[in-house]
Image (cartoon, rainbow, N blue to C red; front, side, top):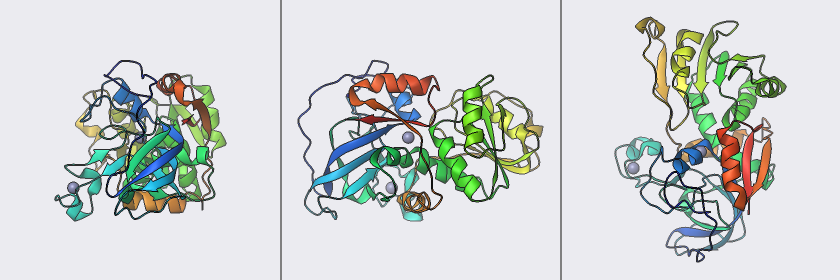
Length: 323
Ligand SMILES: [Zn+2]
Ligand SMILES: [Zn+2]
């Protein structure tokens, strides 16, 4: 499935099978998760370095062949996340922050991704997947899970955690946070009873209106929904010293708010991309929780329908494409 230009439907097409270059592996795609970021790319809110492009950065695949110097053998199962390549030498890479690499290439944006039957990836940026997860269940771990994990770590060590937007990422973070003994509060759109029920089912002790106050102040909040008005709402919901983490790659403008809402050492920050260390860490934690991902599957050709479902917030958990 190819995106020719922004804001146009993805197109099914037959491409020549890619060949692995030096250090790369050729992959047989078994499943690919659908992320809200794919929607931002599809809608033109996020532009990469090339078009047309095959989207998709939560790839579960088996290794068909390895190019020269690739330190991976054919036959294994791997996951390919958003971070597709870094230079390894810039000031960010050199200081353990490859997620901020100046020349980073992202899967499904700068290199073709997993909305396909075949893909190639840099062998140094793919990850073996825990056996405890079947292909479909593993797919959402690769972005919803990884970015959620990084966001949770950047939230500090909150006893009371708020999650704004209860989609693919929140449904995983919630399980990890509850496992770690945190109290979790879910904030959803007004009237979204289905999401609130789902959140309570997964261990949230409270689920309510995103713009309203929580039953008690929070120590941290993570915003996954792409709505800027949630930023001041979340700042008002956290206690003094609390942290608000914006987990999405794109958000509508943040309305102005009184300085008093930030005062008392509240912290507002974003989380960008992931490092390979984040991936290793989270893929180790996930089977221990154990995280149970809830997925809705779509055929590869139904990518547009899957993206619509993500746009409408109509899914419980994550959407996954199956070639
Ligand atoms: Zn770099
Ligand atoms: Zn993603």
